[in-house]
Length: 304
Ligand SMILES: [Fe+2]
Image (cartoon, rainbow, N blue to C red; front, top):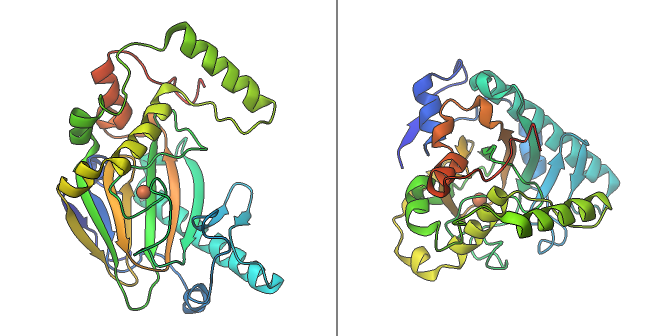
């Protein structure tokens, strides 16, 4: 994986070369976070702990509902303060990314922001939830219908870098592992149609069933397959990255395979980028997979 560095805060709209780099696996790295996080907000974040870390993997903020989850709410004033800090980070990150990557803003979906106050090294999580195993992202509760998952991260730790390992791009991984991970050879047929109808019905009745198209079912399987494949984890190519204190970086985590090996105190905002607005839609995971299957794996989110 190559790495691209953009210096300073005055980065104008990205060039087509930068869009291509981002969409094909590069990390856009900012040694100094290019939007404001006040010293007071940073200091407050370093005092935060998270409640029930086995259930809530991170503290999350949902911009659409202006709602905070996973925070230790011993003290109402602290909770309110945390809510305000997360809201500010989310707004500033969105505004910066909108200026840097304007072609994505039409039709994008602003997903959750998160704060990761726990040390990543040695975290006690289930194998599928572990961050220190190489994987590509897929959200179990929020199917993307082939739209892309892009995230901006900020290391607010004042002293220590956040360490990632990355491996091959999705295109290379899919060539070797998509079939063993269960990429279908044929459309789902009547059984798939029946299962989809049942999922939609149960979901509309308010039951905790997620109606996923084949693309999202596969991507979730692929996420689990990579994390559970010991030979892959041991033997895959690994590049190590140290994201220094105060830095930010942007990456499409549905195609750049990654693992967070160590680090504490990171902020993050996720964006769901519409397939229609990608600079190179043919290089997206859904296009790569559909070239392999020869049939569509999801309707466009607009039609879903
Ligand atoms: Fe991830």
